[in-house]
Image (cartoon, rainbow, N blue to C red; front, side, top):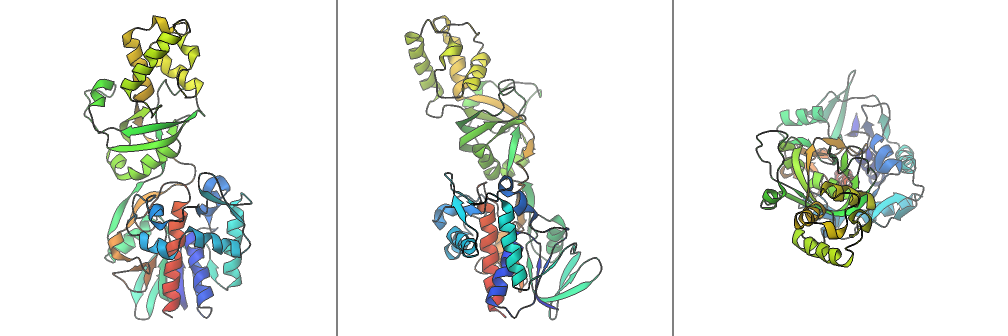
Length: 423
């Protein structure tokens, strides 16, 4: 018999266990982990460096990074924010740093530092960790909760689920009356096979992105003209760094689109068109006017070698080629049509996206326990008292940058306080 069973040996599970044990040392706490190792997602986070949280200390501004959960997390972030998480680790000997983009990492640049801290603290506080203990079922009983693994029944007064995106756990919760928002991928990159991107992998630049509405095509090969596209209103917008990869486009601006557009892009079956303005300070019209000025000043220079705008040279060369401008063509040789085409390539390059790729190992899903069924003061189920949630099991997800971990830490902390105070 345990006082508290936590199902899921990840960041939220360990964080909750530590805070429960610190506040109520008399409680018997166990973490059930289905795998042979714990904290696996912490291990790979941030390329193995562990992006602990984000250095955004305004709760209101912090919530703006959550496509799902923005409204619900405002109160919790007022109670437990990134500054509190940073204090937790610093007080336990883990030095942290805030990088230029706001992401917070251990000074060691190693996720093992965070893992050692969480495992060391939980061990010191007497938390039992049961590995290779996949939970097959859980149900309410008179004294609390019965949790069943492959070989044994366990009992606890309170149950905290921190199982992340686990379909089997969601199915059980659904059978118990909870509404589950169907999961869809959130953080992912775009697969694009286009000559304009081929051979320039690694190029990174600031760009504005627009996802265009789904259209019916007479043929999969049919090209949608830029002029007809320009009349359509985009369904999603993003701006920021874009990275050309071997498979298409990635980078923070793409990941932001994938998070905010998770449900829309899922409905599109990840087949859609994206319009890229490689020079966001210009419209197509103002770019054409600017290029006419360049033509007047640098008439004798070749277009390819002029590099008239502030984008990487390899990308400039690809867009010049896409505008049907030859390697030796001079500015003086450009017709009005070619100037228009180059302006369009620079400010409204349209690409066909066919599929997605997981962003590193940091797979995140939208979906989970419906937020209306959770008390966000305690992260307790509104349907089943003494049942709590934390982390990605609920329908909360964020853009990349440490925000998903912050949701896990905050939910785990508030659930822990509620559980410890009730005993």
